[in-house]
Image (cartoon, rainbow, N blue to C red; front, side, top):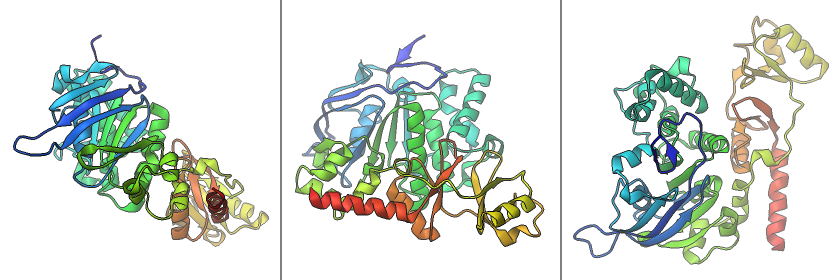
Length: 391
């Protein structure tokens, strides 16, 4: 079976990412005095998320697009999984490297399923295999195939469109995923949820992801490593988020880090790193409202968390809501904000400020995992401040 960029054509199973190397890569446009990108050399480790962050116009998007040759380098060498990307047919290369952009870039006259199926179709997969892969990808990014399969992009929210965009980028199972400010056009809450979703996917798939953003907080939350870029994509610092927060290389990098570096440490800690409360009263759709009311009364509690048939939290029910209820599927009020085990403590803090108290936490596939409380996050902030003061 022919391979390109270290991935088998038509591979059905997830593959680990591959290493990317840029060696003295330069992009010079005709008629310009200065190159857009000058002499960039960096190694992007296999299976890691590497963030390119820098001011507008610094060349970060140009640098990323040279990896899949949407922009052709003027000089230098790029290898993907040990293969020279510049020697490959550019169209075939792009089908092997997933690409997700801001506002998803979906084909408006294609359904969700047709959008996701584009690259597998170009690679010649048979219809049954493409259909199975489309449903697998929709489930992976949290879109119910029964509900979304035949919808068109205009019928989706911004966050749903971005999920389809990620599913499309991953559909042919590429080892490399390039993401150009993919979450920049959605509201802050949706953006946080999409970031969590990306981290959850990465924990399963272990792709090599190159992610462009101008938001340093996003870079800290998502990146295994961050490349802070200056003009012409000059690498000012390339290190782990905690190393950059602790020791910015120069004043320019320190400007990106900004004030409150100790509080930014909250973006390095995940909800999974702290103790969750597991004593909340829960019930699933199929249970009796009267039995739940009795359980709340016995435990002297006021609210219960209602879970759907897949154990995903969906509603809060007050004990008084249960007196005349015939089903738990509609009782109470829909959940507001919730966070996942992949969320940062900063996300959790913001959610709790909106909700006015603890919020539910979800696991790998959206199932209920426990509650996170404000006291837990505040204690962590206090500990971080004390450690920062000592250092």
